[in-house]
Image 1: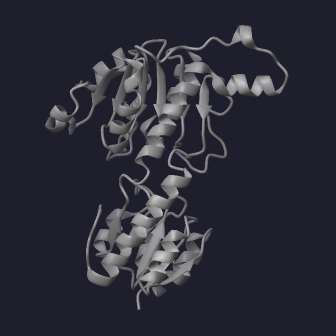
Image 2: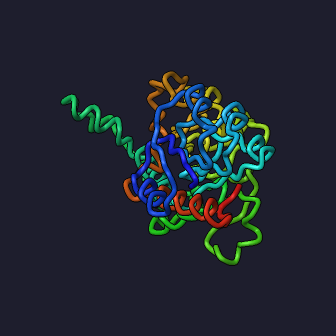
Image 3: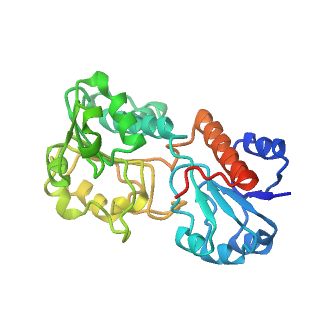
Length: 311
């Protein structure tokens, strides 16, 4: 009988699906790399979210592991190269948290434009800062979306009622342009220079270098805003901090960081930055969907060899 380890907290529907399929399942969260290495030889499958780092050492110790499932889209926390070398299948659940992530990006946009966190904090303190809080309207602005996969597409749908011009920089858009007549396919340089809001929804670069640097900020509108709910290393945090302090751009809202959990970061306490702790995909609805998807995919693979959403 196959055996699966769930090493991150997730909706218990995943456990129920494995049990329904007569697959043994253990839920052991918060384990260190050393603790996982000790027990991983027992398992044929492993399920993670973003907390567990499935390192080369863990994979090399996993003598019986056949599949690693990520309850979510990004697999940055899994050493995919080593997994492939060991003939271990890596699966994710694309689309499972698309709406949640896009809605959070939209919430970040509205929060930074209307200075909502500052307004909330000061009002709770009895400081009536009405005269010092002047927001910016989203309507009729230009939104630049970098990366046009599931989340980028969903965000473009969410802003339809705001009469916005949407610029997109994506390698795959040209082949799908007929499906999205209301967006404009442009170069990265054109997008950053013309957009009022730039929202990142792309993968990290192969070499891990940031997509946007100090020189890019100099080409942007001083009234522009950066939104990053994609990957932490897409935006160089030091350069972003400098751009905010030097008034090269108006503000930023960030949900992902170069090092997580972010216990310290150069952006901390910057009044022009809104920061959230990687919660874009954290909704009740999305947690159920991704847990259900990953459990069904791993069950199908272990029981019948069916491969779905492999990376």
